[in-house]
Structure formats: structure tokens, C-alpha cells
Length: 263
Image 1 (cartoon, rainbow, N blue to C red):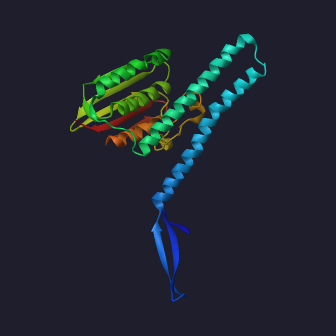
Image 2 (cartoon, helix red, strand yellow; image 1 turned 30 degrees about the horizontal axis):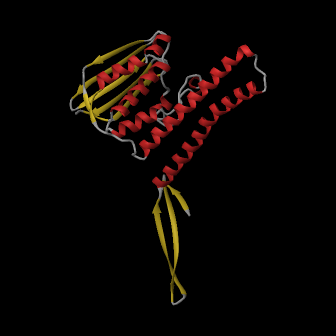
Image 3 (cartoon, one colour; image 1 turned 90 degrees about the vertical axis):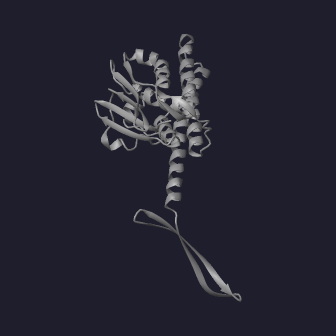
């Protein structure tokens, strides 16, 4: 039996005690299962969200393929339908890859292979990769700071920086600005991404690092993504012993800072 009392969940287990084949009493165990119940709830929500997110591109792929199969598409329109199938397949691949990444982080199975990593040069590489997307939105990117070393997984750190910068691009406005700063602060190294985009409502700011959570679902559904980017950032920060700070104002933009232990 489970009992919820003042935000704590208790489980009651009763076992009979017999002596000379006669019932003589009972032993009652009261267990605090709050953390276990919370973990079970997270797993249930994650499974439900994964099922939904996987189903959406699969339905699109199946629908486009069925229309082509039934001969309902003009020959000149077939390449366009094939391109849509390819886009949905790529979306599905990226989603599966992100699910695998976050599952490994959950289970502490991500190989760290810690090494000195310069966050400044890594940020420059990421911004270079994102240049075509920035050009498409006429965005300006500025990188400030200095070479700063941290000890960690280069692959995971690059993933974290990419996810943050990619969001700053996707949720920005035309002719907007992205500022990336890397600098030493005492015994820590600060990495910060600031954009001039749509911003996040105050009531949503505590949830943006949850898996599959999207603050403005109407707008976000028009933007490519798996909904796991910031969740990976959160787990990556935990793995590196770093802290995250978020500042955002609707219509003005968002700033996310990560404070890493300095090498």
C-alpha cells in the first residue's frame, strides 16, 4: 500500500509472524519510496513522449510513401515527396541519436575520456558549423573572451555548445545577434550564449531543460529539433560538475551561462 503525505510517498509492507504454526503477530515495514516513485514517473513520461515523437515522423513517412505507392502523385511531384520522406527520416535518425545520448548520460555510460579542452576554440568551431543557418536568417555572431581550458569530454562539451548555439540560431529573429562569451572567473570558466530571439515566459523557464519540453509549442513545432537538446546540456553540465544559469525575457532574448571548474 502507498500513502502520500506532505510530498512524501510511503510504502507499507506487512508480514505475519507465526510461532508453532499459530499466528502470533505481524511485522510492519514503512519505507520512504518518494525518490523511486519520482523516478518511475519520469520514466513513464519519457516513454510516453518518446512514443509520440517517434510516431510523428513515422506517420509522415508512411503517408507520403502510401500516396506515391497508390499512384496519386504526378510524376513531376515525386521528387518533392521523396525529399519530404528523406527529411522525416533524418528527423527520426536525429531523435534516436539524442535518445541514445541522454539514456547513456542517465546511466553514466557515456565514456568521459577527460582531456584539457579549450572552450573558446571549440565555440569558434561550432559557430563556423552553424554559419550557413545564420546566413539564412541574416544573423550576426560575435565570439568574445579568451582561450580557457576545462577538463572534460571534448565530444560531450562540443555537443553542449552546439545545442545552445543551435537554439540561439533557431529561436532568434531575422537580423538578430548571437553573442558567445568564454572567460575565466576566479577558479571557474564561464561559457555564455546570449541571443536576441523570442525569449521564454517566466513560468516556463524552470522547465526548458526537461526532455521534450517546448515553451511555445505552436511556434516550436515549426522549428526542427528533437526537444532533447537542453536536456543533454543539463546532463552534460552535471557530468562535468558545472552549474547552469538562465536569464530570459519574452520578446527580448535568452542568455544561458554554464560555469565549469577551471583546469
